[in-house]
Image 1 (cartoon, protein in one colour):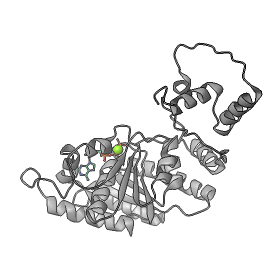
Image 2 (cartoon, protein in one colour):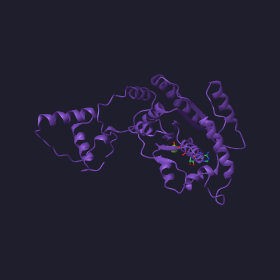
Image 3 (cartoon, chains in turn red, brown):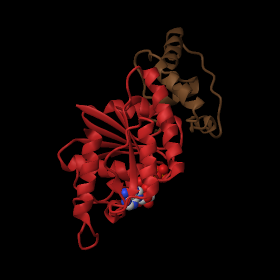
Image 4 (cartoon, chains in turn yellow, cyan):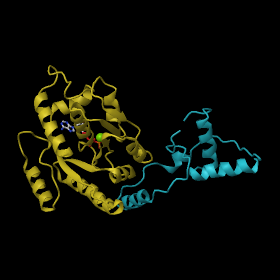
Length: 214
Length: 87
Ligand SMILES: Nc1ncnc2c1ncn2[C@@H]1O[C@H](COP(=O)(O)OP(=O)(O)OP(=O)(O)O)[C@@H](O)[C@H]1O
Ligand SMILES: [Mg+2]
């Protein structure tokens, strides 16, 4: 089985790299074969891999519009997660053309919602060219685990009315999700002496991942 | 060297789906970000003018054609393959 999941949102800082990394960790921890293609020019995933995590996640850097298809095709098993850059580019379009699923994270702000719309338009147009459905899931990111803001509720209702599949789970704002990059390790290997709320973060990460791959 | 074409032994079937994807993407503001300038920037150059046996000449042209390479890129590719220059 091979499953290609692209993390796309032309808005910078929407949470693509974080969500990609967290999903990779959960899948790998549960025994899945995971390859990350790091298409973020800052290469956060490549830098993460230089750390000490024992999770056998393969990270491939230097992903460009010219080699992304080749790299996707080269993997023959497991999950291929593509961390895309935060701009509208040919790289994004090509990755989407090869994806079995596109995850679009966005923060609850109206501006982000407009950017998500841009990505969804692209997906819809590409579906006609590749002559198959390209499923996508829109996910709110960096939300508070305790309070639901008014804007969040409004945006959810708006997406619902437009028939867009907003995910039930959201990647909450949590120190642990930042810490995996800071300490270059996984949620499962973080030091509880240094980072608060690891079990809650794992619970959140697993719920999000489950919903993405289901 | 930032060239992602591997050497292809048989003629490449042109990926027209990808071309269509690129076209639609461009229309929606998802354009190429690989500068053409950077691709062809080679620094100082020296000319080389050779007379080849017809067979060799034809084979070289076919090689460049099949791999969609300019003659310059074709020679470069072969030298990389032979280990004389680094990729
Ligand atoms: N769930 C979260 N909890 C805590 N911090 C987060 C979370 N999601 C993202 N962040 C932080 O927000 C910032 C932007 O997130 P991230 O790098 O994942 O976004 P991105 O969409 O990949 O951005 P870019 O478009 O620049 O690649 C980072 O500093 C990251 O640590
Ligand atoms: Mg990123």
